[in-house]
Amino acid sequence: MILKGIDRTYGASTLQSIAMELHEKRNEQDKYIDYLLIEKFKKLYPNDWVLSLLCQYSSYNSFHTGDLLWYRNIARMIHDGNLYMTIMGLDSWAFPDKEFGKNKKNVEGADIGIYTKRGTHGIHSADAFFELSRGATFKRIYPGAESTPIDPDEIFIESVHGVVEFGYQKICKSAMTLTMGDMLLRVPYSPDSEALNNIGPCCAIFVNVTPAFYFPQTFD
Image 1 (cartoon, rainbow, N blue to C red):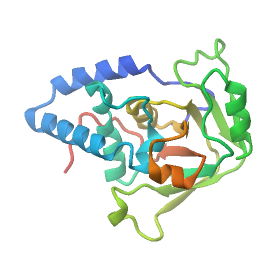
Image 2 (spheres, rainbow, N blue to C red; image 1 turned 180 degrees about the horizontal axis):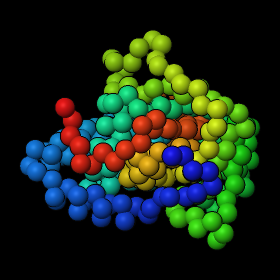
Image 3 (spheres, rainbow, N blue to C red; image 1 turned 60 degrees about the vertical axis):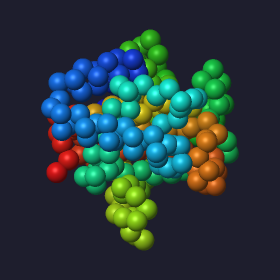
């Protein structure tokens, strides 16, 4: 269920601890899959433009294992055909968190309203909430360029709203938001990804159309 004005996010340290605890309880085959996907993440980031929208790191020489374990959820969403996104052009990449007013104004040109109710609605760790003033068409994300058709699957969503994350973002936080079924608006800082820089300043809204908790599952 996509809840409006409710922040159900957790802090990265909590999510990393959860992932490590669950990983230790897995059988050897599933642990092996975990490590394969961690290595895949390291090979993809930051050159994969979709991944560079989902997450962003100030330094990626010392990734936390508990953080990267959450990439398994993202990989599963893509594998099952459940992860969709829409991209909107902006005048600028994200500004620092302390410049909330600039970040808010930056996305307003894309018909996105940004609001926050810190202290009144128990917002946890997301930067704010967002709401699109109109419906939007989302395109399915495929496992790779070779499997992406010329005309990818599309869905139209009338009511688009969720949580906002500006700038740096660990993959665990994006994965948890999408796992729960909440929409995620990501506005990264000027990225390391050459492919993303070629697109130019933009933001992306992600949605997982079939929310589920993927950690107990394995790939067929």
